Length: 419
Length: 195
Image 1: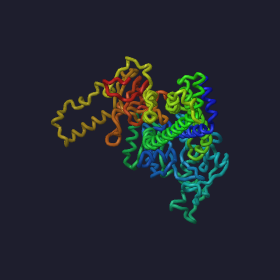
Image 2 (image 1 turned 135 degrees about the vertical axis):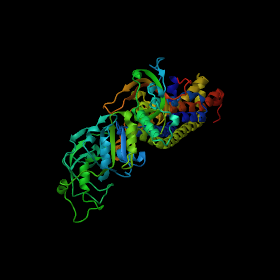
Image 3 (image 1 turned 45 degrees about the vertical axis):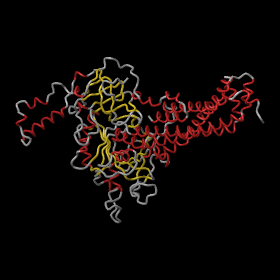
Image 4 (image 1 turned 90 degrees about the vertical axis):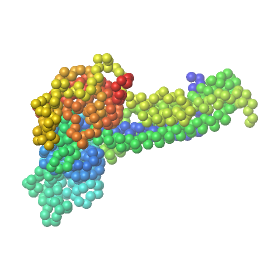
């Protein structure tokens, strides 16, 4: 203990240099643990979004794009699938429930999703939690809309407000379905998934707002009013994707086969778990590269510590000599230097973690608003703890080199010092 | 594994062999043996098909060697065989047995690090060229989330646990197997102890 307090006082004496070293260690620790944290949190956030869905069915294409556009609203759908194919799929004896999804329009940068009541009944997130309403109820009328939590918060909407859906994606859109405004009837509770970013309307509504767009744009003079559209046949002709739940998971491959071999139309069925696993394999390479770089940054920080300790040895020759002359053994001097290195690393690590948590608290609402992903802020995971332990060990080890030099320096060296 | 490699690298750079035993890589391994004991019996995929389920009986009365490939009878027999195979009968006696079975992981539920619900299949990635494995060659594995397998798609693993015969919810649904897994460990060829 005496050695520790001596190390502390000695540190205070040289606080300027050591503070800079401390900061470099703190920054490198924040970087390393931050990357590790983000890696895990993105994965958790992604897997939280698809829960209990056995298959995702869409137009034939890549399995990753299908997963990304259908559930995460990332990227563009390659094609639609016909309503008849959807009915065939929903009729399959092993299919327990389906959620049809129709994408492509947006409201002030937020995707508009056409679906049906099954969405509110069967969609699960965060390992089995159903969607809940913060206010209002599911859509019932043709021009009803249900908002995700983040849409309502960011745009300041409440129940009863009118919104206008834009044709296509993007925030500034010049083609708008302003002849058929929607009324907000429900606002969903926050889920921490892309659902928060989404405006939900019925499939029939998607059909209704496009009813006079058959030529790719509204034809002047041929407009159909909102009320006229109600009277027309609004059965959807095509949807973008279907989320499928089966009566037994053992049937997964069989239904997947049924979809992939469907003769009327080229379709693709994917297992969300498999597609996600593929995604991790793809981005795993980038993650590893980032971790290696961050590891090197920590290493550079530790080298900085080593430099500072080695240079300080010279200016501390007298200090060491005095310690020795009042009875400190070489072992004490050794422990003093190692303790100092350990203390600086420990403080650097703590400061780094504090910095990281500070940044996380700032980033959390921003990430939720822009990406719809929820960054959970919790205690360090086992892997992070292992990283921290490793850094601390490496810090202590860094101290061994200057400590050994101080250990070898004779008592006489400091006392016969030429000033 | 990255942890381990980085660690070894850092250790070498710092000329410090001593911290090599602090091995982050070990975190990727399965849970300790715990409640798995000697009563666990290692089975193979054939054990999931009833022994008396013999497609050969279908051919009784026919001399296979005499039937030409072009013979319509050959096609009929083949169709019958396939239909029989699709029925995928199960072995009810397996229900409740504590077994160990190797296979490939097709993930269903997990958090990106652990996989706690997956389908175990006897072969890998063949979903495109031939029909998928029949229901009696697909095992639904469920573990507690904390005991989830830390690994990737199509890893080969040993699954140890209690096997259950699950009958479908509807009449049309075929029966199948579920393993309530105690332990999922990376596959090691038989004969080599994995723990």
